[in-house]
Length: 317
Image 1 (cartoon, rainbow, N blue to C red):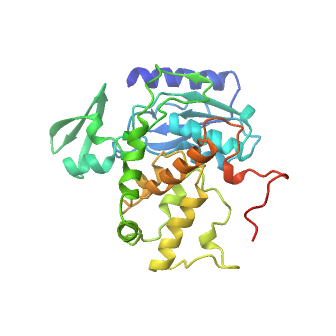
Image 2: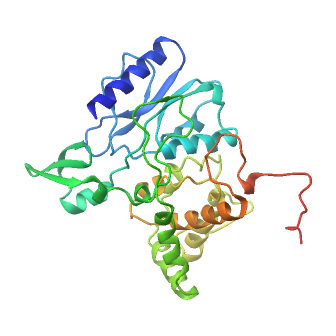
């Protein structure tokens, strides 16, 4: 990983020295070894704390919409982040000519909760090598197979390689297994109507309505979210079953054909709610019906966002 960071630093320094970017979005080390933080570098000589490992859990595409279109942005992207950037480009959230993307094939994001569950809260050191991760807890070292502690979204990832990077660091990885994406969706679909509602309710009713999922999601960039709108009022903003159910269902439909299954929403959730099976199901339907997969290019509109004057208006009643 040290070699990777060295190569990444060299590329970033080059972009600044050639005056190609105004800011580079990456990660930096933090006080906790388990939580590298998003970082916004303004100069090539300011990269001492640059970090990149499998604990970098934020989707950096989330910060693309925070800058004006004229800002020249550099960014490190994995597979899901690159597809998120494509989705945002389609929605006119930045200009491709003002982006420089350094891609890194992704070997998966380690789930902090899985590490803590196996040891405890006081993890004081972390390292990884090839397919192993090693942590230090209570002065003892523990080593795990990385596959055993990856976040669930990474276990079912289809596209680990960046699809639109200007530079690539590392060798491309094999594509994922589509059957793994379907596994959780098929399990849900196989349930009876009542059991599906019970499953959904058990997850939704743990929600404390903190909206961490919304804040972590790159595709939730509306100036005013529907749940905060009060004229008209779309749903209850208080913690009621009806309001909470509506929040998760409407948000899922807003992500249909736009979600890249990065898992940032689940990783941000303080009570570990699992809801990506909803967007996975919707994305599966859109792939089957419209042959569209979110973020695979920076030009094609998602089906629910596309409009044509020749549409037959079958939705009008």
